[in-house]
Length: 416
Ligand code: SAH
Image (cartoon, rainbow, N blue to C red):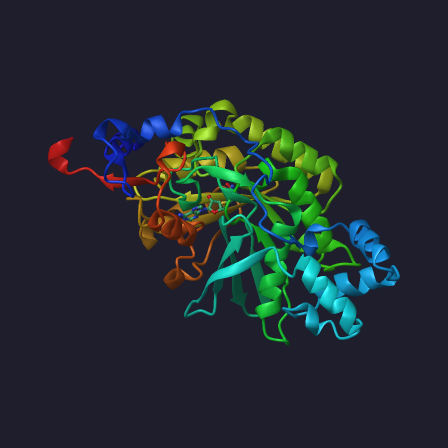
């Protein structure tokens, strides 16, 4: 079945508000065609009371300390506790005077978010649903492998890219995260790990398009890599992007040694535009050229992510086309059997089709791995947990259509 006919079998319904008339129902093709706004608003939400302390720059913290007659070395002590210490309250900053700890808790929030949910999977994957100060929700995940602790973080509230298989974009994008809201996800997971565990890797593969929030992301990653702060090696950080060529080049020019992963998902523009709507205005060749520039500038091999969906992009001819695109490039393919999203009908292919796809790439000399599934029992598909929560809460009809939850349901054979 072609993707088009598959998509025609999907009807998006406004499932949270049964009062919405059928005329408001939109087809998935309408959903995927609008121009994509890659620059959502910055954080303009109402901040109810105190600022989260990590929202302050080191200079701002020093200035505040000076204003209450405290020496500047206190700023270093406080940031060290916040960034490296596995504590959850100002009172635990035991090398600070008690009076200063009291002043800190009166003036600032300890954290940028509250934990709204905390799930642990049977494979010890942990997932947090975090409630930001303006009530928005994001997710972050800790994955455990022997000798490796990988944290997956979000960069936006929602996502504007509209990839048809992804739970994160089903509600559109609300806003960019601030630098502190990005890097504090790593700290929050670090705080809940056992004392003998250390974070070894960070993947920016949670909710949102990281390069659409470029400046805040770089600030956040600089805190994570700075020796003075979290001190993680830049090569242990991977940024995954839908493929925004100009931003990839800016990233390359910045001189940072992070890894780049590009979400390709299709070997030709026709199919990619159906799966990744933002591709309409970009195109695969532009993305590959930008990724090649990234390799030239950094020497870092690019990883191409490819979510395998049964009957859509998993056929042998797709593997052949993909091999033709990537052969001779400094590339590695990461095949990701699609994680089920309860609102969507697409599924992962079976093991034989996945293996066949792999073998074709290998025959052409393109390095490939199949990503292991983590946290399958705790809604670990990107954005699924947030989506479950959002759709359960009331929708403000004045903000339609962006705020509606769009549900793809299969149309019965007789309806087509
Ligand atoms: N916007 C960025 C980063 C967030 S998505 C990007 O597009 O890369 C991170 C990765 O998770 C992407 O490769 C994305 O395609 C993949 N992903 C999203 N939903 C998925 C699902 N349901 N199953 C498997 N992988 C998924």
